[in-house]
Amino acid sequence: MNNAIVQNVIRWVAFVLIQVLVLKQIEINTSWFHYMSILFYPLFIILLPLRYSTINVMVIGFFTGLIVDVFYDSIGVHAASCVFLAFIRPFAFTILSPREGYSVDLSPTAHKLSFPWFVRFSGLLMLSFCFFYFSVEAFTFAYIGQILLKTGVSFIFSMILILAFMMIFNPKE
View 1 (cartoon, rainbow, N blue to C red):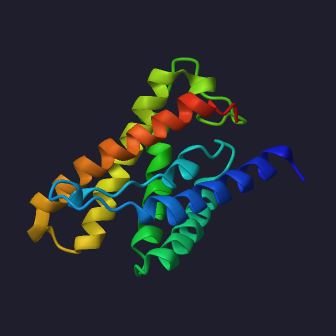
View 2 (cartoon, rainbow, N blue to C red):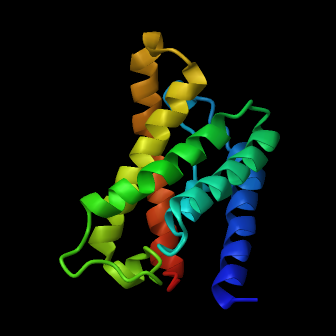
């Protein structure tokens, strides 16, 4: 089997386990942290290589979200959000395209495309993911204030964890 496939399967298992076994258990009982959800597993979809078609990434995202939904007892919220993330991923690549373009075999890591580029890329995708996730969770824009507050707080804490992971482990692929 291809080394990149094995690496992505291991990454998928690790990220989903971190999300459902560790991050789901974090509960801080204060009024401010009531709005916090640390969402780490979308990083798996963000780090998938460019050679995967959008349809393939959407299918991978759907099954990833479905597995997380099982553990969170939610009805498709994570699956819908992961499919949305996979759908907007090519637009983020287009918006943040470097002058020399992308290599097809490239994985969008900080090691390959620079840390500032990765911060912009992952930040754009995670902000979109968090907003979509909390919008679907509320299922109405009547709670737009809470949606925006949850999006902002969760985005900040999720990005801190994602950037810490990228600095500590610095994946090459």
